[in-house]
Image (cartoon, rainbow, N blue to C red):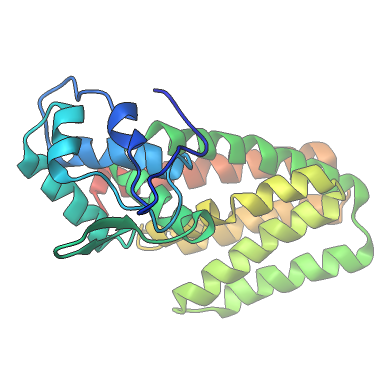
Length: 253
């Protein structure tokens, strides 16, 4: 796939290069496949917010599919808030990357998008490094802060939003304690992944109890200043969290 970071645009804000960038859908056309192909370019930064997409006819010709497939894909992206369909005017990219990423990830998970799986893989490795370094460098104050986040997770009860916020705070606190600015920046940059990940698995049976138990093991290893144990505990947490995510995707939730 050809990727152009900042394609030329017409003075009226259209994206003439998108039709050229797209290649025909090889397998039998369907709405999901067309939406996924469009999403690849939208999430890669090929098209700036506010840009008007090519007409249905142009997209259909570029992809080698029926206009009905394109129309269905555009409607799906409109429902997700990724584009805005303006009757009589066209379809426009609705928002910037920072706001778009959570929806892109969620849509990617529903479609089994490879880029999302790559993000999951990167998170797994980065979290292990974060826990190991946190165990090596944590102060007593740092441990107290982690304990507070875990306590907030326990106290959240049935408040899923509060539980997710405390869960994410725990992981970002580990990254801060690791005192590696690059690692911290990377984990902060995929915060949207953590948010969507937890939202998707929150209804899976055993998620809350399992997540609490797994976080407690990580905290215990950091409190004991045991890098090896912290790495193992985080690896186990990532393994179980990934299994819950797969269960969510397989169940179509």
